[in-house]
Amino acid sequence: MPSVVVVGAQWGDEGKGKATDALGERVDVCVRYSGGNNAGHTLVVGGEKFVLHLLPSGILNPDTTTVIGNGVVVDLDVLAEELDVLHSRGVDVPHPLISANAHIITEYHKVLDKVTERFLGKRKIGTTGRGVGPAYSDKVNRIGIRIQDILDESILRQKVEAALAQKNELLVKIYNRRPIEPEEIVQALLKHADTIRPHIVDSGRYVNDALDEGKVVLFEGAQAHHLDVDQGTYPYVTSSNPTAAGATTGGGVGPTRIDRTIGIAKAYTTRVGEGPFPTELFDEDGEALRAKGGEFGATTGRPRRCGWFDALLVEQAVKLNGFTDIFLTKLDILSGWEKIPVCVAYEVDGVRHDVMPMTQSEFHHAKPIYELVDGWAEDISKARSFDDLPANCQAYVRRLEELIGCRISGIGVGPGREESVTINDLI
Image (cartoon, rainbow, N blue to C red):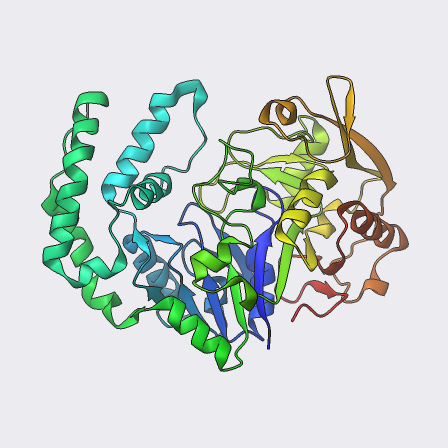
C-alpha cells in the first residue's frame, strides 16, 4: 500500500486541502509535516465550508487518523480553537496525534514576528504575523520549546526563561517594547497540558509502524514548493520545507518509504504577500480571476495577487519534487475566456529563458512570453470524467501536461469534495 506526499506546485493556495480531503477517504493516516497556522486549507463538504490552519485535512474523514508531525510549529491556542469550532458546528472529530518533537509557537514569537516585519519597512517579507518564522529560528538556534517540554513543568520553565533572557533584550532595547514575563508564557502553555497529554506520540515511530502494517499514509505540507526556504523565491518564502523532501524530515520517515508525490497546481497562478510574480495581472482579467476564484487568503483574508498559468514555475516544481502526478485545481474558473494565455518562457534583458532563471535578480526581471490557447464557454462544474470536458478544455489540459513534463491525473472543477474529474488513480 502506498505512501503519498501532496505538495503545492506554485506559491500556495492551490487547493491542497480539497485534493487531500478527496484522497482521505482511502487514507488510513494523514500527516501534516511542515509549516504552522500561517496557511489555511479550505474544504467544502456537503455544501459546508471548513477552513483549517493546523489540523491535517484528513480530520474530516472519520476513518483517518491525523498526525501533526515533528516538522510543524504548533500554536496550541489555535489548535484548541480549531477543534472547538468544528465541535460547535456538530462535527465530531478526534484530537489529532501530536509529535513530541514538534516545536511550539509562543506569544513572544508572535510579538517578535510583528515588530520585526514593521522594522523592515519596505524590505518586509509579507509574513502573516503568526510567529512561525521566529519559532523556526528558535528551533534552528536550539532554544525552542517542544511539545514534550510541557510534560515537565521544571524543564519548560527553564527553557522559557532562557529564551526570554535573550528576547527581552531585543524587545526592550531594539524595538522599545515591554519585556515579557516568563511565567506568563509558562502558564499559557501549561493550560493545554492535560488536554494534549494523551495525544502526544513519537510520531516518526507511529508513522513507520503504520507503513509496516500496510496502511495508506498521506503526507501534506503547508504553503508550496516556491515558498520553500531552500528551493523557493528566497527571501520571500516560508521558514520550513514544504517540498516533497520535507515530508521525510518533517514526517519522520526515510526517503525510500515514499511511493508517490502529487503536485497540486491551480489552472492559473496566485500569490499572497511580497515577492516576484512574472505573470501577475493588474487589469480586468486579474480582477475577474480574483472575483471568480474567490482569491482571498484563508488565514489572513488578504486579496491574492492573480495571473495566468506559469508553466516554467510548475515545471521547476515537477523537476525538483519528482512529481509522479499533478492534480489541477480551479479549472472551472477559466470558463468564459475566448483565449487563455499560458506563460511558456521568460524574457530577461533580451534573453529568452525556457526554464526558471538561476538567480533572484534574473527572476525578478523576468517578463512572461505567452502562448494563447483557445478557451471555452461551457460550465464544466458537472464534469466527472475527462470526456465530459469541452474539447478546448481538454486541449488546455493536454498542453499544460506537455509544458510541465508531468501527467495531470485529477482536475478540480468546483470547490466541493465531489466536484472533481479523475483521469488516473492517485492512490
